[in-house]
Length: 245
Ligand code: GLP
Image 1 (cartoon, rainbow, N blue to C red):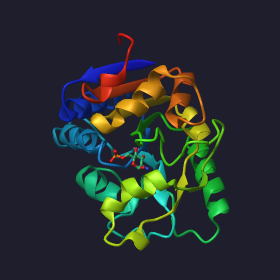
Image 2: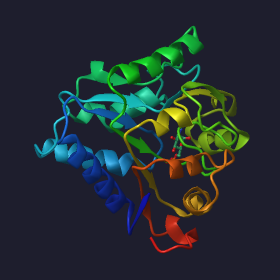
Image 3: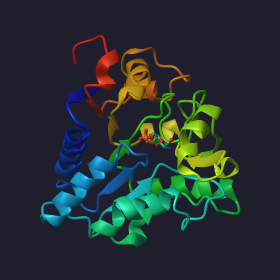
């Protein structure tokens, strides 16, 4: 596991984007796993810059997003599909037909989740997975207690996550309580992983994820089992680390 500590969130985005861009140059078609939340935005801005400068090509790239809210239409401005279009896909030369986000409106959610897993396997697996981290240590929407072998499935959001997300919805009753999420097992199958984090509210969960025991109560700690993980985190978020990285 590598931990890169940087000064600003802009630098965090650039460092993570370079890791991905260097790997993308080696393979086509390339399969990229993507995350939402505010943290990956500077990373997406850096990828857009590289693409506009002609240094990074997405024409054959296939993407899979980690998660989506259940019951939220893809056209809703808080859906993760909408977020991805707005923050990345609309600004790069990607074919949107090659971008996949779980369908929170699927009629048969279990069948949809099984199909999502099969689609990822069908293209040879994710080459690089982007992750953020929830303040309770969740990755994707794998809340504390999610098993390390879990695959894509419907999950219930914890009160903590619902509270974190409520700032994005106008009315409390609109905040989703369930989501579809790739599992921790799905994430561990990705060839490489980069987790980005910034801000003082991530100090505690990062210290536990990076230096604590591997435990289902801190889902991101499962990343210690993966041989190709890089954490790119800002100084303020790294304040709880005890070891020299
Ligand atoms: C949501 C997403 C996670 C993300 C988390 C943190 O819960 N499902 O993938 O890591 O938010 O969001 P932020 O980056 O805004 O702190």
